[in-house]
Length: 113
Image (cartoon, rainbow, N blue to C red; front, side, top):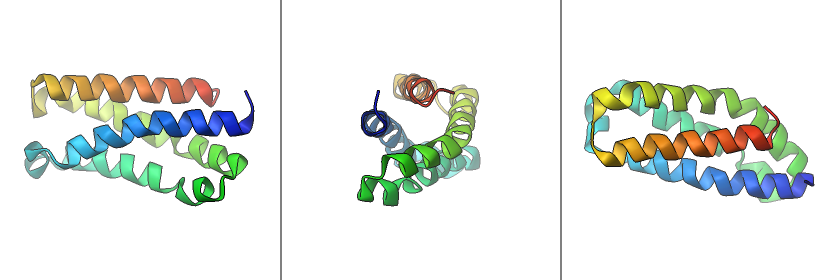
């Protein structure tokens, strides 16, 4: 896969990460849980760091930055999966964890991690 195609696929997968982050950010549960807030902030920061490379359509810079942020995405994903049962047992939260895990796993595969 070309660098450009890898960047495009990674960015498409990050749209799922963004939706999970938005779900968390706008949930009532975030008000009482600093760890949940940290998860959404980490997801946001990781994606924000890719913005300038995306705007420039610089696949090499984008993928380099994505690899740098991958460990933070992985940690936020693991943290969310760990705290989710305490935060809420609602299906929306369970599915958000599954969505985040699947998106990050696919990103890891694309980036060769």
